[in-house]
Length: 186
Image: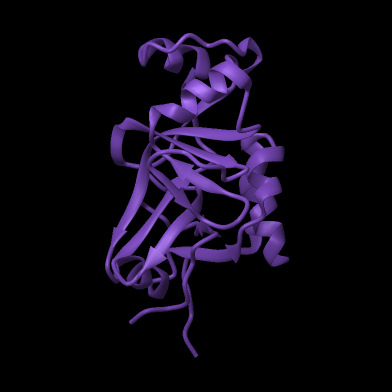
């Protein structure tokens, strides 16, 4: 069973999501194909800012204004590894180009560029990512664990983290408080 390709879509956790890794999360899907899916949670900042992260990876943060930005919990896979969701997509080592505008990069060259020149201009840095094996995400969708909607980069890069979840739901034209934690089938 392969539903549509959800690359460049948001996954919105349904109220009944009982996995604490994903309860009330908004996940951006960077890749979805027959082998599985990969994304990062974009609304769960952790108790670390970019200044601390750069210190941990031994890169001097030349652009001090970036230092106070939060680092995010990207998901339960490889939580010791950093991922940079950014626009413009640019040309970086170890990048997964999602579309003409956005990419997900896991190499240090992007951190050096961010430190030295402040580029790319829009970044969301996570520790860890969310991953699904072949058919796993489709099964979760069939079990009504997630709502999906085409992603809007303004939600990722222009809104505060605590507003992103509700903004994504508004893209669907529904009120989250009216969602049931059980689904019906006709």
